[in-house]
Image 1 (cartoon, rainbow, N blue to C red):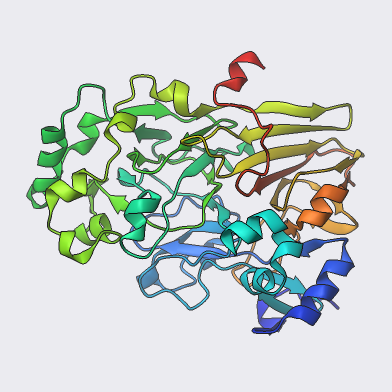
Image 2 (cartoon, rainbow, N blue to C red):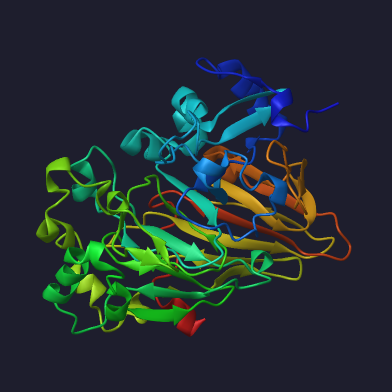
Length: 419
């Protein structure tokens, strides 16, 4: 009988070549992944990850509730008190598990493709479900140059709000983004200087947008944003850097340490340095929505399926990541080819991929293994993955994201207006 619980698996490390080769052969280059849960101590979980409510605090109350599930990740979560493998995805095969990061180290060109391996020497992106009851602090992610000051990488990111995980909007389905045009540097400086005097009122300088399931956003580094309470699918660069610029959220304190955690130690009290990390032109863009808002754009469609772009566009001329939503109608069967490796999560229905069973779970215990997540190697993606919906009544729906510059023919920002 196959293992159903991660505690039943043997954990492999170091040389995983033999296990990897066996796993690659089993389903034509598809690798089954185990659920990868991440808590955040400063946030309140939104309870839409399908994680059993008894397991919300499985890492311990002091670590905070689990409000994220990471997909295809070789990136460690930057949490205080983290367990050693927090944020890292595991491949599951034949009674054993081993890290996707180890597999990429062992056979990078085979798994993620020669171009990405030669340029980055790793899988440089990941995605997650990000799920909270209310809004989170107005914050930014450093760019590459800023993050390098503390030995990290910058982080552009993107959002898509899957309808299957948003049957309720929770407390505040609006996101503040950027700064209101006309905002001055001195106004923002005062917000940071007044950190310990009560609410620093930085949201008064921003603009909120109502979030709609089935849409998304593309967010460059150094842009302030306070994500609202929809459950969000977030393809992003493989980094966990951030700076929180809001000091009070729904009556909860945001410590100064979360503002400066990814800034040089000798700049932790330098208010001018802190506010100069923001991209002023980007934050004050009078056409902010036009330059960042996404709606799905159909790529291919027939009676059996629809494959839609949900994350597209470029940041400073570069495609850091892209993503699609694949829907297969009941009884449908289709072969999908892609330009590169991709990580997949099932959000609805049941079926198969190259014969691998796919099933979207209703409720997941913390140690459960599931049949809803897998990684597609570059060779398998280019050869074509055969997807079949085995249900007679329900759509099979999957989200998949790609690495940098994999889809040069993806739509440009604003393409949905002409779709």
